[in-house]
Image 1 (cartoon, one colour):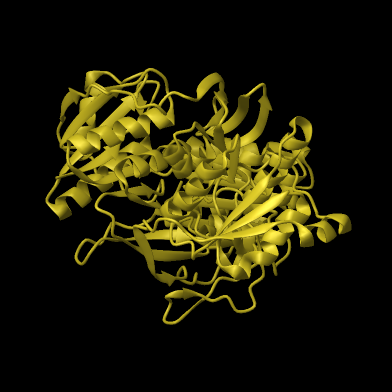
Image 2: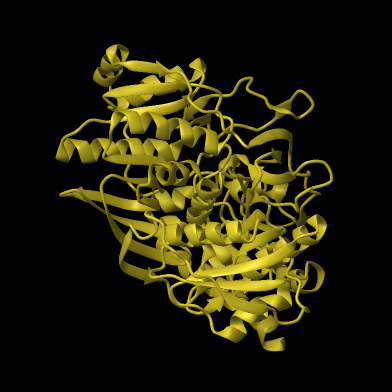
Length: 239
Length: 323
């Protein structure tokens, strides 16, 4: 799971536009990752097994990891490294998963900060297991995963054998809000810190830029709203 | 030395995003003194003429790969094999849903770094730098890529199509499927017919809570139909199940970049604006003159959606009749 700035964050940068400005920013579990966590809990509650939440990041994300434990994960692992790029993150998770054994890996379809959408696919390929991207429904029965995934202009129902990886899309399930009992239990659940393995990041974020400011809006009289169409046709030339 | 372009085909035809990717690949290849090679890996290959036609959009040659099934893992594997055979330095893939499943496979096979959501031509004057959108459209980042091979997943509708070249030579590549290629099996497919997919749309009409209920979407759909636009919605509308989740645009939905985005009855929360702010022309229609959408819109109408929409529909009809 990724830890990302809350969706209401007004994004700004510091150090000559080379760093994301963290001041005053609230961090949350990436919303798609929260869906995958919840779905993992639902699957294990029905079928047995346990859920491990894995995060690649520094100690400042431990509050969010505790939240994952409060939601219901049995244990958590933090791989102690700055998440450099998708390849780097996937390689850390793949190395850990390979050592531990697993049946199913669920990720979010992308993080809402860097929008790579790559970690799940890269780690599945590294592990040599099937990958089902952008799923809105996933069930496991007798070692077979059946899922519905978004494709361009429609949806596809697929199946694959365990072990398998998939990424969560909106509609997969409803996120769970941790209750008091969960929050208390999370304090004593294991949170293991593991040092990173390889370092094969092949990209660096050099600098950032905000989109250019828009000019003033051109208002059209609502009584003469139809004029919009001729403006879009003749002036903006988009229709 | 070469630049490989993934030419995704659908029922034996290429879509617009492929022409954009081929144009991008050709431009980059010329910049690097390399060859632009379009690779079509599919279970239903286009005919020879359709394959060769990619030359008109910039491909120096076209390689076709016959797959056993339409699996992204096989497409990625095949693409990587051709890339290795052709000594490729860059692989260009459109960042649509298929592309998002193909890019990671290529990355692992070629030990390549990936930039996804690329919105600029690569700057190869000093290293290799591309610009991509981050924070779901709230900002851009310049990424330096240092791996030997690079994968660029380019944002659809961000690059122009360069037509005018001549047909390219087509060859086929004998693909030996790797172990992960066909592990996922299709059980069923449900393609939406007669509607423009939102991710491919150049024009979008979108509705928010101001539409008051799903029963009022007829007007949004009618306007969209007249313009040849796709329909979209805000998060609350999708959360309340007025509209399906795939229409939800915004930071936790999809980010789109159409030529025209018309927002009806959407206030313009920061998360929603993130997903649409790269649109070329934005129109906001809202009865609240203080709605944040007016700050990012090019054109605005302060008025009730239920009075404004019928006027727009009438005007769109007359415009259509005049064309």
